[in-house]
Length: 490
Image (cartoon, rainbow, N blue to C red):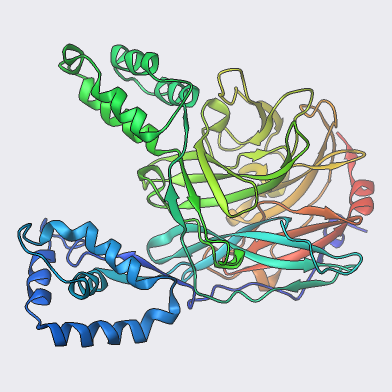
């Protein structure tokens, strides 16, 4: 059996659903070529309506859209608060009028209206009500909407018995969650500042005044206490701006428990990810206390630069975002090991853009310079190689799904095996491609691509979700024993 014959594709697929919408702030004229806004004129026209007309119009909006969204009126009131400065401060508006103004400054956005791709798969927090041999899984999804704006969504499926696969429905409405306070870490702030050329005196003063963990209010009080003489330095204001931007990289989002996993959307929440949250690689990790939790890495994109971020969650209801620092986290495709090895926190990465590497977290919470594991060399991967998710632990070693890019920018999936105790050593490699674009996979938003952000092992089978040309998400299974037998010693 050739490597390509090991993978069995399933008929079950996930396709982009334009009915999956969220509500975003909309400011008329914001995207116009002229540097002006039509917002003030719109507010004047709305407030000129009499009370009866305003109430009737708001009722029509709620009747048409209320069932499509969670707490829509509260969202409208929040959007009014964001444009409240357009209303004269001495003018008191009734609640109906404030809500109506918020409705005019809102619009629906189809989170996967353009594409759906790059999934990862982990065991679901809820394993109740299953038959023997079944496993409920959570599937993370990169969903892309208008303007190529990416966010992270989810689906739920049940694997087994055997190679059975059942996808759960994904009904709306969707929720983006509420941003809540988080305790920031001084060492990560220091690492972030170390990566840029900022005023050393201002940075040193702030870091010296902050405790090891601090919240947003403590941070602002610390900035307010900086001696005026330091603030007069030529680079001080730029450094202050960067301090706030760096702190904004860390935040938490919480979803109501009644919102099902498939209805939760992790949406960009700060400037560094304003143009998207891409390619989340989820893994279930085991902590030092033996408790299982979820962790993921993803790429934050602001339209010019990329940055690696980490998600932590106990139950996929509350998510804490922290930045990843250091040379091992300066590119896309960071994938965490599910546990420590000899006390080391390890991750796969592609720091140079074309080589699969291994990086370790150092004592200053920076991801160190990577050790190369696999370089471009096969005919199907001469452009670049990288990982397709976190390593999977087997008795024979760490099984790593890889991706390679070849002629016509075709993406295909391969596999290597790392030493269980010394993962910087490649012990075996699949000599050919495990999964390549089939004829049905070639056409889509990004043609000629199959790509995964992580699979899992269940009862001797490797379950591998994959994006097919960003047009749909498919699923394949591979017998682990057969895959290991097909590998050749490195």
